[in-house]
Length: 158
Ligand SMILES: [Fe+2]
Image (cartoon, rainbow, N blue to C red; front, top):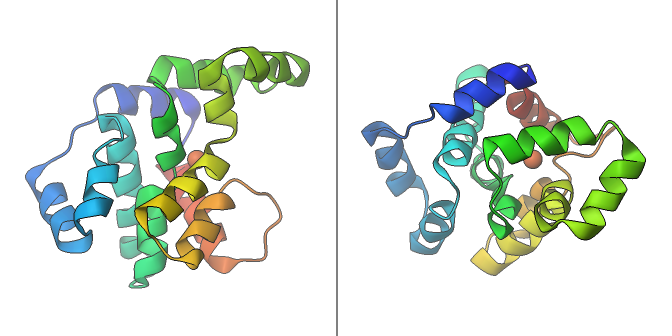
């Protein structure tokens, strides 16, 4: 999905009763506590990534589905609004500036390293190694891991 569409989707994001039912049936108390730390637009995005994997590929693998719900959990380390996210995405195209901002502005640092931070948070939650690994590599390019490739497709489309 293109970035402008993603921005407007984030601005009107909502979580519905059926989403809460799904989460309550799928996550334990600690996982739920951490999922709830995400802002509403990241919750919506993570749920949609998870639903996409279920609906398009019929995924039943709990690890991959939990990785989908927690792939962006690293972003809870800073307040990353849709506007800030747009800035990080645009400025990433100017590498020397992105490097500078990453050093000096905390939310840039968190955004550019959220996969790594997310993996650490997944460990803290008690999620297994497989989930930690998928979250850590969810933005890596040229991967051979089929599950991460599917997650990347779902991430891109939602
Ligand atoms: Fe991400």
